[in-house]
Image (cartoon, rainbow, N blue to C red):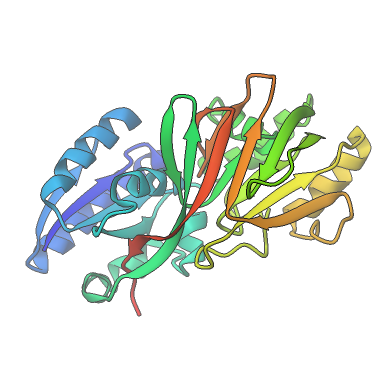
Length: 296
């Protein structure tokens, strides 16, 4: 089997790069043809990995959800398989697979590569600058602001960065006015701080924004909150952090297959913790579009 290993040299202060080298060496020891791709920036990583995958059968991504995002945008919707080795600050997709540590994959690598592929859903995101795929959560509200802020906190340890960004963003949270249409129905206006389209249950390193979401049911879960005063938002955010917000009458979790969101403001769109574009967006579920290898 021809296998490409792509690792993020910046994840966990360089730890992912070393893990990537170890993964590539073990794959070669198992008799497979392997190519290890490490680039200095995300654009170079995407281009080099995509080129390497033209003649490969499987892609192993080493890092956090950002590397998963890179992987699904290369192999999503194809017959090529994805293996996830968690070595980043946010490993929400790997956690959903039941893979908590890089060692969980390394110790059973032969079994992983010989496993039957399992299919998982993806999100197709159409935006003014193109199309992107996502494995987890698409966000445009407070959570997107937190993502953008987290990219600036380079001196904060990676495992604390998302929560530090929450604290910093709380100083000036912004309600935004959105127009939302689900499954082609009636368009509804929302002025809110929380707006997310979820395929996975968690984001931001384990925050359960959509506890009822599933990556294998062909559905998305739109999570939208009503307009709130600042004190009430703080109370609601505390509930979100422990997954207790779903019974709050001010939070609406709606199953759908397609979600369209637009705004008169310029709003950044994030997915899997990465900036993918700006509003308006159309998010559509891609049932079973990702083939994943993991140990039985």
